[in-house]
Length: 368
Ligand code: AQP
Image 1 (cartoon, rainbow, N blue to C red):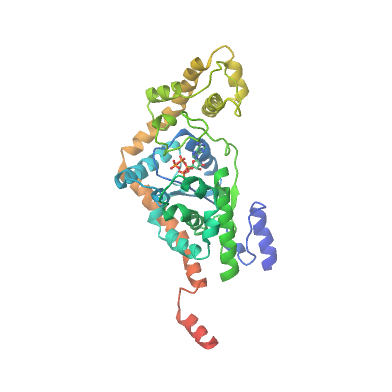
Image 2 (cartoon, rainbow, N blue to C red):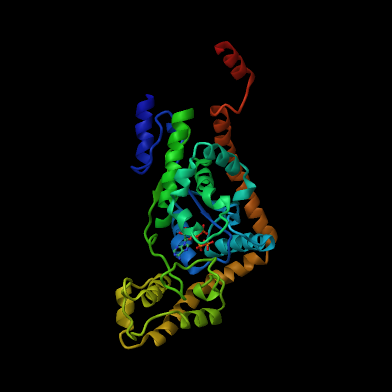
């Protein structure tokens, strides 16, 4: 079979947007990479925007899921809290149903290939390009001293993806520019040193653009690192906490329950949460709430959330009691991830002139 024909057959397996350099056909498989930072307890927004997607994808595809601890060091943090968060995040992901036999679940820092490739990619990135990324502009605007990590972390993200030759990256709207940067860096590397990386593309999934909003300030997204814990519903919140947080969620002065994400952000956010946890449509929810006011509706939402979280909390509690098991899951993930990443890094070292062999040295001598 000719190389070109093989290339077209393999290319059919990929989404139309994935570019595979023509001399790489057999080395690529459809591979999804995602990550989550251990910056705090997982909240309902993380579940909607990320975990729910991984649960759907894990039965069909190879998923590499990194606990992005290096990224979580970008802003000031407490070392003990970071270790606790890593373990708790692992337990919560398993409690949500992430299957470590289907997903390579590991700690990013335990695979040094990420930081090595980051350096190679950093050397072909420009300051101007990184400083133009919207996330950098947003996050640095109020900082007096800007940590270098905030500027360069998108290069580490590119390394996270490329060291596994990942092809599909589930991302939210806010991360699209970072995927474009990854694509550009892969192309630059391929052009400069020879075809190495398939060009990954973003995987936009159902629900992906439902962004849950802060309960205290619905103009912002629900976030792990929001200083106000009442702004988010954590997956491990007690029923009492869930009720209190939803009761105090900011709404407006209109008492009807109507869905209007443009002008009634607070109520619409509660309806999004309710719709997600109950699997009811927004229309059905609004019809059922016709005769109650937003205060009463908050009780309905809280009950549905508590019911949704109950099995996750029970399962997570069991995992949290077995730290040895959690560590063994991460260790097994590290081994699998390292094996894949090391293969890529070996190729990168070879192509970029870092790896020497007797034959290579002889060839170089002969050509000089
Ligand atoms: N509010 C949200 N609604 C829907 N999806 C969300 N995600 C985060 N917040 C919401 C998705 O969860 C994943 C988590 O990615 P991350 O941990 O790398 O960081 P993040 O996106 O910055 O999430 P947080 O919770 O806001 O963390 P901090 O406070 O540390 O920055 C991503 O897939 C994201 O889309």
